Image (cartoon, rainbow, N blue to C red; front, side, top):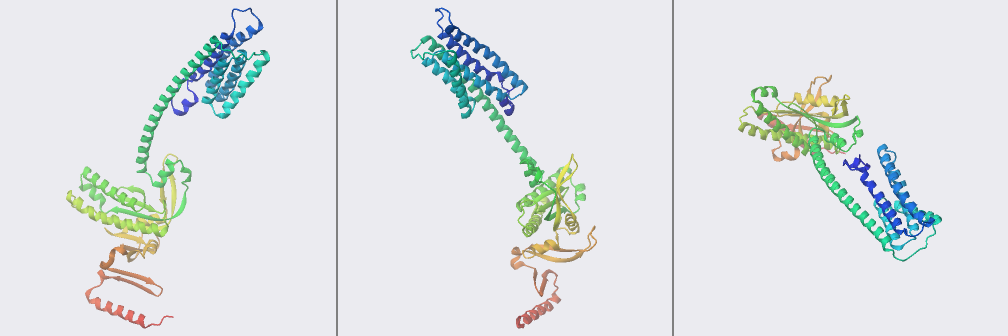
Length: 466
């Protein structure tokens, strides 16, 4: 049998243990009444009343116990039942105090038991209510017995009340000690459960997008509604990946792939991207769904991430070569910006939080159209990052699933990284557009290009622009 607190904490507690304190109070009051009776005197109503009250207290103890147990078993307002019984306890003790003629020490001891019980069981309001019941009991006792208000000390009566109070305090101390030990055990178990929960939560974060993970762990799954968002989507894969799986041993291949994906995931997290999924060797990263800093910032961070990934792959080639992998891994990347549908898709038994839409498909198609080591971006992405990233115009390409050719650009590098080694110049203004690719200019065209630039500069200087 469990009490309410035991159910909430997960600990098994004998609910009858809490009911032992009511019999103790009643026994103390009954013993005090019995000690106050002059058994050698002749029988009279004044002698029968305290004896009857003592018997009533003992009978009440058994009845109250049965009521408490039944209320706990039936779950019919057990707290309300205990409250009513506590009022009855205080009222009966008040009657007993009156029947011992308000003998100073026994009265103080019985009243102190009620104060202690009221304060340890409930709030200040509970204490006031029980003291009201105590006073009501005294008033009721006054109607059936006129007390003499003696101030003399009766050692027999005082001893009975003192022994009873000492027994009550001792029993409550044992009960409190048991509760403290149980709380310590529960606290230790709770700490262990919290550690286990934190570890499981940490592991779960590796398999879910950050926005989904936070919603699940904080109980706010209802916020994950399907919506349209302006996102920048990134795709990458390893060229000739299938052929590589046939050439390498399973252990070597697994180690290589996990190392590659770990590095890509680390870089994506560094730039604030959300990894949507791994599809074999392919990586899909989304910017703008979680912790967006604006469409332009999302697109720029995505391109910067792609450049960092490409640089890291070049560094890893030497590491793989030293491990006996002679075939260099070459990665292709595609980026596109546009409105996508974000939300939870799937069946009632299996659901996935992902991004869908035409612009997602275009990013995947650009990745497939890219050459090894190349980063292709759409015109929409280029328009947002052109002032910070140097790109080469690749013209239009035909993309599967799209009726019209798509304008694409090849990412060279961040403008701040080019400096004096800059081989590609690009600038735009109303009435002016320039694309200068030094790597593609032949020696016999150099003079003609210089003459054209000088003529343009001379014309612009002499022109009076109003």
